Length: 202
Image 1: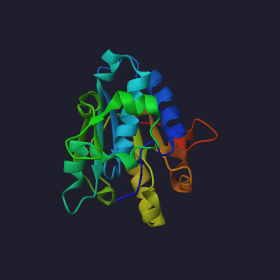
Image 2: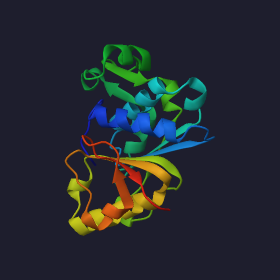
Image 3: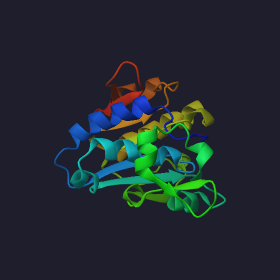
Image 4: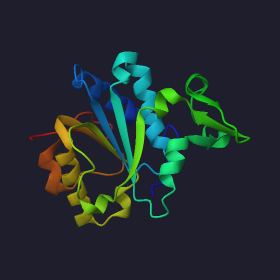
């Protein structure tokens, strides 16, 4: 599990959305894989950013697959319920908080609105299986996860992401996480001040 919070590394996710929306224009399905989603804070941050940037019809074609290695089997319930304490939401800009959260039955908590929840699904997945959860993804996001892996494991996980991406798709990683040299030929960095990469080759 990776520790994260709402709006963490928002600039990189904004870059990713800007590039990916242009790339995916005309697609009937737009797939995003949030690998290592933890309790869903990053997943719903991604959903908010895309909802703001896409037209409503395009957003209905968006699907975010949130995955994590959840041995206790409760991450999925939390991501699906999408209920979070207010103190976890304070980094969210007021205009986004007002638009995308509603009061929950649990005191002191708010729930992500259905517009975003309907675009997200959670499933168990172990990145160290080196088997992608799917394919033809326009964007893979993996943040605050690779630091838990050994170097050879990172190489194999990046190879897996390359396999999961559609041709020309994008990969967003932690800003402190550089690509291993062994996979540098598989991706091209698209902005100098963020770890956002475009897939090279098939």
